[in-house]
Length: 120
Image (tube, rainbow, N blue to C red; front, side):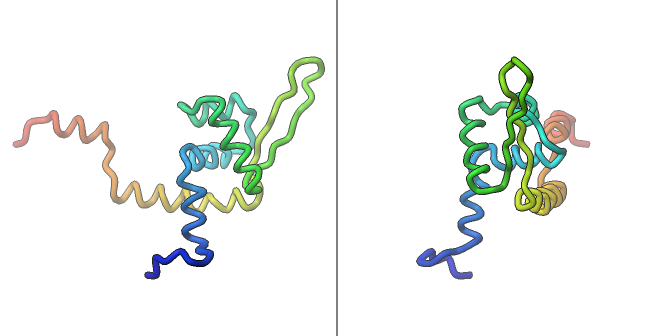
């Protein structure tokens, strides 16, 4: 496998985008359908508002998500996020990660329980 990065490497670029903290969590949350900012923040969990805003803006720039603003009649406008067709295609990546993890990673809660049990 050639690991030289002298030219454009699509895999190298994709990994660069997808490895950013929270990106795949955001995509995974939006696979269930559109979400408002607060609903998305709860679904992602643990990401502060400033970081979430930055990641959403970056994903929007990459055309993986779309933002629309809903008029809430006198209240603050509500931002709603949805995946674009390109963003929806990342479902295959999420499914592949899920399959790999089920095959190769142990459930840590089960591991803690198993290690606490005496060996017989």
